[in-house]
Amino acid sequence: MDQLIHIFKVDLKEANRIASMPDGIHQHDFEELLIGVEGSLEHFIDFESEKFNSPYISFVTKGKAHRLIPRVEQGKCLIWGIRFKSEFIAELTFHLYTLFHNSANIELAKGRCFDRLLALCELMNDELKQAKPDFSIIRHLLSALFVMIEGEMEKHVPDIKGIESQSTTFTNFLRVLEENFHRPEGVEFYAEKLFMTSRNLNLICQKILQQSVSEIIETRKLIEAKNLLASSDKTISEIAYKLGYNEKSYFSNVFKKKAGQTPSDFRKEMKTLVG
Image (cartoon, rainbow, N blue to C red; front, side):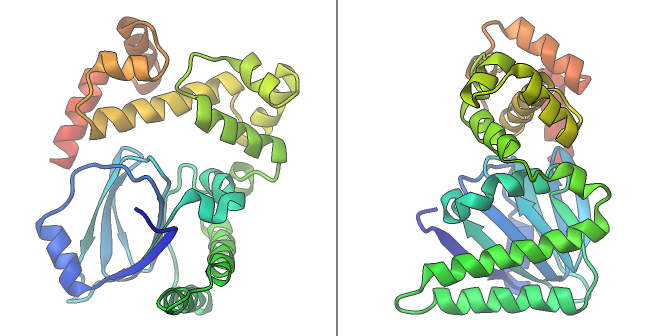
């Protein structure tokens, strides 16, 4: 995507087109927010396939392997889609990653809040269509939209406050992790980057995600490994090397210990699951 932000609608005609020729599992170089108004969504994400009825919200972070198929219900389907580059609202990007950790999709209730979300979409879309759109206005509207979504998630997702981070240090750790998880670096590397001790960084991570730094690093590597196994034709050796493992056998052992199956078995299962 070349633009900083792109807003679109998936209507009945487009939904039928996508459903007749669905994409395979793929990854984006942008963030994507979907707001389902009518119909339902069949979404493969976080390595599971589920169906959500409208109204719903789905947020797909950059690089996450997924596949979505809009479904018509009672002759209706309508989805607002917002795609944007991470740098468009850079101050919120890593907050969003933690906010939607393990909860990419949520079903909502119709009402005042949902109507406001749709109104914000209309306002952003209208501004973007201007000859010279004011991107600062669109940026503020998009930030407001996510604030409202967060408020709704607090009602629907248990312990969301334990998932999201108000810690600048933790946000910075996620940023450094995203830049370096493919390297064979340990806790000390990240602690030094953040000018703190390994112990203090571990304490912060335990408080927010109930995981050690090492567990978070390995989890991030595992997610990327699953993404690549599901959405690319790279060999297991190539994936291992890309993620900083010197030996395919060691990578396979780590993967099996965490995922409960070998990389080859996981790839076969994903192909079966998404057809």
